[in-house]
Structures are given as structure tokens and as C-alpha cells.
Image 1 (cartoon, rainbow, N blue to C red):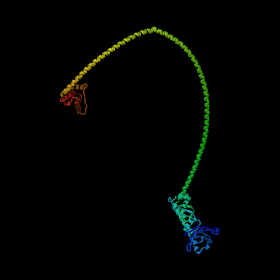
Image 2 (image 1 turned 90 degrees about the vertical axis):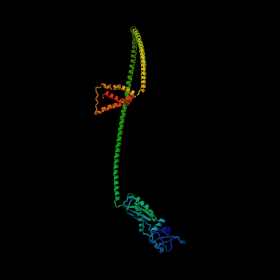
Image 3 (image 1 turned 135 degrees about the vertical axis):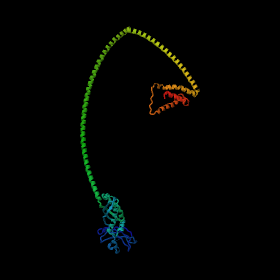
Image 4 (image 1 turned 180 degrees about the horizontal axis):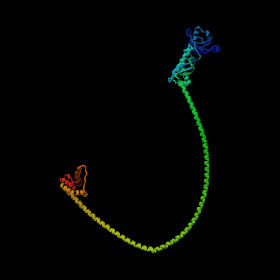
Length: 468
């Protein structure tokens, strides 16, 4: 069954007798149920507009309730209200996003929508149901959405911004109830409370915060007053300092003016004094120049007299001193030149003598050296021809001289005292000396005494010589 909604053309005529009637109409066939959608009319009059798409039927047909057949009058009991319905959703002990259980009550105003399509949805869902049943369905839907939204918000968000919370519930629930043909006209939060005094704690916190803000405001006001007072004092002090500064500047300028005037006066006085002194100096200079000229004239006269005296003295000296002195000087010069010539000749003769003696000594030394070299060469050639026996004999001949040289320092010694903790050390020293003797002889002469048969005899003689 399908149909449309029509407005009665008899509205103007019947507006004073009955309410405006809307119908949900469909195909009307005998024996089928006919569904009507009416406002509650006065019991005396119900205006119906029946429409059918049966071929060859007259459309539309208007009739009054008294003219409705008995088979259709039973259908008139299946009605739906278009009045506003007031709902009071309540969610008890619902946990919020923070897990705090709260109870929320609200007030919602709903009604069946009158648009053609949406009214059809409402008729399909609620036609024939009582207002209580319709309210129950809508109330459960609203409470379900209310619970869901409570689980996503905190207590503070719910309590502090109820309008936003109510708007959110309305926006979320509107599509669901709209599909039932129901329109939410308004939704407000009536009350929010809990059983654990969480909200009262928030109130206390808010009260404390307000009190704190009030105290802070008082402190800030006092601070601002103090700051303003300090600023006023500062401004007063600034004005005072400015006035004092201006007074000091005025005094300073006055003192500077006085100093400037005094400086000008002193300058003029100094210039006058300087001019006077300069003029006096000029006069003194003129007087001095004249005195100098007089002194110059007197000096010239004195110099002339002195020059004449010098000339006289020179002539006297020449006559009495210079001539004899020149003669004596010439004589001494001649004597000195004679002594000089004598010394030069004597030195030259001595040098020649020394040269001749040096040349003779050099020739003698050269001859002696050549003889010694020849002697050493001949000895070397002879030593090359000597055998070990000859070398040993030479060593033995040299040993007395060596022993004499070694014992020469000891000849001036009265006695030798050898201190030792052990008597064997003296013998050890002698043995060490005798052991080192062949090495020393070999280093001096190139003769190895260890290979000489008479080495023991030499050692014996040396030992006797030293008294060991």
C-alpha cells in the first residue's frame, strides 16, 4: 500500500469547526484495511480525503465521518498524534571518560514531522500506538545516546558546558529519531549530580579558585596601588629633581658668566700689564744697545792698546828669547838626529848578528837532527836484524834506568807504611804490579817479556830493588 498526503480544500470553510486533517492514503479495495493518519479531531467531525488509483474511479472523493462505511470506522482507531511530546530522559550512575559515575536528567521536546515522506515513516513506526508507547521508544533512544556521549566526556566538560553537551546529544540522536519520523525540537540538561560528591569537590575547588582569584585580585590591586603610588612619588621626585637641576643649571650658568667676565677682566689686565712690561723691555733694550755700543767702542780702544802692547812684547821676546831658543833648538835637533842615526845603525848591526847566529844554530840543529835521524835509521835497521835475545838484552839494559826513574820519588821517603786489614793484600798488590809490568814494557818498547826466558830474573831484581 502506498499513497500521498493531501491538504483538504475545505480548510477555509471548516477552520472554525475542526482541525486541519492530514491523511495517509492508499489503494482502497473492499475487504482491505485502510490506514488513516489524523489529528485528533472533534468527535463530531472528521474530514477525510480518499484517493485511489483504481481505473475509472472518481478522484478525489470527500466525505464526513458520518458517511464513512462501518467497515472503515474501525480503522479510525489507529491514529497517531502530531502534538509536541515532552520527554525526561534520565541516566543513573553512568561512568564518564574518567570513570566517575554521575546521574544526568534532561528535558526533550519532540514531535512527529509533518513532511510527506517523514510522516509516512512515523506512521509506519507508531501508527496505532499510544502516546506513552511512542514516548517510551523515543526516550530509550535518547537515553542510549545520552549514555554513549557521557562515556566520552569528562565530568568537568559535562558540568561546566551543559549547552554544548545538550547540543551534542541532540546532534547525535537526531538522525536516529529522524528515521522514525520524529523531530527533536529541543533538548536541555536539567540536572547533573553524583553519589561520591565529585561535583561538590569541583565546587569547592572552584570556590577555592574563585577565592584565590579574589585574593590575587586584591593583591594585584594593592600591588597596582603601590605601583601607582610609587609612580606618583617617582613623578614628584622627578619634578623635584628637574627643578633642582634647573636651579643648579642656572647657578652654574651664573657662575660661568661670572668666571667669563672675570676672565675677560683679568685678560684685559694681563694684556695691559704685558703691554707695559713689553714697552719697558723695549726701552731697556734700547738703553742696553746704547750701553753695548759704548762698551764696544771702549773695547775696541782697549783691544787696540792691547794689540800694540802685544806687538811690543813680541818684539821684545824675539830679541831676548826666540832667537836664543831657536839656536838651542837647532843644536838639540842636530844632537837628536845624531843619536837617532847611531841607534839605527846599532840596531841594524844587532839584527844582522842575531840573524847570523840563528842561521848558524838552525844549520847546527839541522845537522844534529839529520845525524840523529840517521842514527835512529841505523838503529832501526839493526833492530830489524836483532833476534829475541838481542831485544831482551836491550830491555835489560833499560830496566835499571826505568827502575831509577820510578824509585827517584821514593828516595826522598823515609818509610812506607801500608795499612791493610788483611796481610794478603800487600802481596796481591805486588803481584798485580808485576803482572802489569810486561804489558807496560810491551807498550813502551814493543818487547813481549812473557816470551823472554830471563823474565823471572828481571822480576826478582825489581822486587829486590823495591824491597818487597
